Length: 334
View 1 (cartoon, helix red, strand yellow):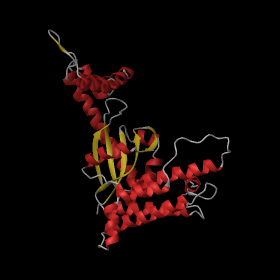
View 2 (cartoon, rainbow, N blue to C red; view 1 turned 90 degrees about the vertical axis):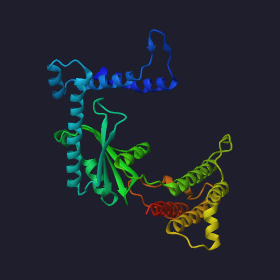
View 3 (cartoon, one colour; view 1 turned 120 degrees about the vertical axis):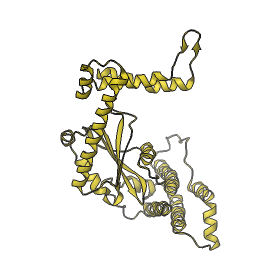
């Protein structure tokens, strides 16, 4: 039953794609892809996946044969799972020393089983995030099972009434806590009724930093290869090009700074990020691939103890650039 439910549920994206592509209507037959087909397939998948749940069993034993009479029992199973899961995750957070700021339910695009196609999203103040993170990581499968936490539960950090792109999730009683991927946050922010904080300046400096790191790494590779190596046809942009592209994209800001016009807190942070980035471009331009450059410094970072390496001005400049960009994005939403 569960296997049949899973296979039927997996057909839904294909039905949606087929619907977008269009289907013929034949005389005497009608629409070969009727709109209700996907809805019915979803209902049957949910029923098959929940057929052993006590509420559904009781409904079926009464002899109900129509989907519209049986599906409410499946919906009740889902609602009970959401209620139990919310209580469980709230208790876990409070034991860890964190209080949910806001909670919501939204659709789960990848449910297991099919009947549990709703998930919980819980907003936690960013100041309490370390405690929340420690709590969800220590939350064992056995504890979740005892608390009847059956749906996916996602924690996101919030600050100043905005959702940050920081989050973890667990799926019912299965597995350990994992980081949320970026595509999840817009839907969660919408479900919570909060704006999603954008990271425009951070993205800009990270993109530039990626170009500089690639160039720095290419220098290291070139310096340590013998003349017998063929040249790499895909050479990254040199630092002067990266600096010019960044300056062109932020010409209005740079012009405002040069004019002596008073700057907002956000723009001051953006200027600091730009100055640090230009310094970083200069440092990378002076590399020859044999010294402690940007790529080597970043590769030497310990992911468990993020301490900047000694005697690496490029990594220090990159750290200042990103710190200023974070301040700029934060100030943009106050």
